[in-house]
Length: 262
Ligand SMILES: Nc1ncnc2c1ncn2[C@@H]1O[C@H](COP(=O)(O)OP(=O)(O)OP(=O)(O)O)[C@@H](O)[C@H]1O
Ligand SMILES: [Mg+2]
Image (cartoon, rainbow, N blue to C red; front, side):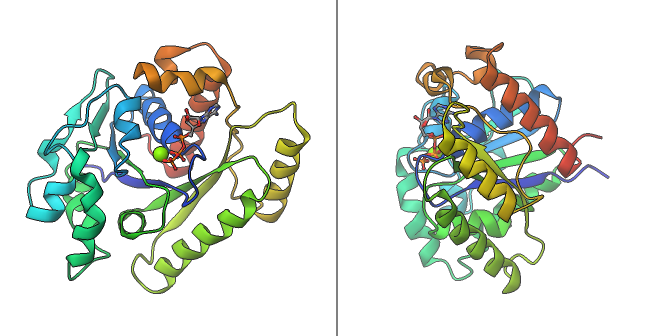
């Protein structure tokens, strides 16, 4: 029997907390560890698509599958990176939220379309880069996922936003929309070891959510902020820097925790 892919949402309703940076570089790290991986850009901003160096292509996103039941598997493109495929964004993706509202079974649209991708045997991990809101796109992503990663910027009040996303995911689980949904972990991003604030946030999160925070933290580095403008992953742009090492370590941690390697 072909192996099932594990579907992983990268989510946080808060903007600019490292979701896309993590989706792209974790996908690349898994691919480098020979885990066949598909990255799906669910954000109308299309940042994951451009960060990986691809253009928004009309008809290239998941929109057509949801709106007109077009075949989704055929939209995945093999990227230049071995073991990494992409379903990108398109300009019209902004209308996806409205398309979902119109559907009868509006919470389970992604689940319906992603299931054949997950069961086809081609991928072992499917990463979903979610937009910064808890609208129907993110809800559908969480409803379709086996697990989710919440990225969190090490800053003042970061814990407050965290409560909200954990609550929404918990209610999807408890209300039966996705009874098996589990938190893979909270990922601390943009960590600056020189500031007390980063350390304080880390201590607080690890204390309150013991065992649910990834050991790996992602440092704040200029290279990581620059890489997307060149359409390159951190492994291509600064392969020997601390950010590449961190995302490689995260890839290992995630692969082990989720049993992604045969
Ligand atoms: N560890 C880091 N060090 C330095 N810059 C970073 C780091 N992580 C992300 N950035 C930069 O911070 C900005 C926000 O990151 P990113 O786009 O990954 O967040 P996001 O949560 O996906 O944002 P949005 O909510 O808008 O989708 C980007 O310009 C990105 O390049
Ligand atoms: Mg993003």
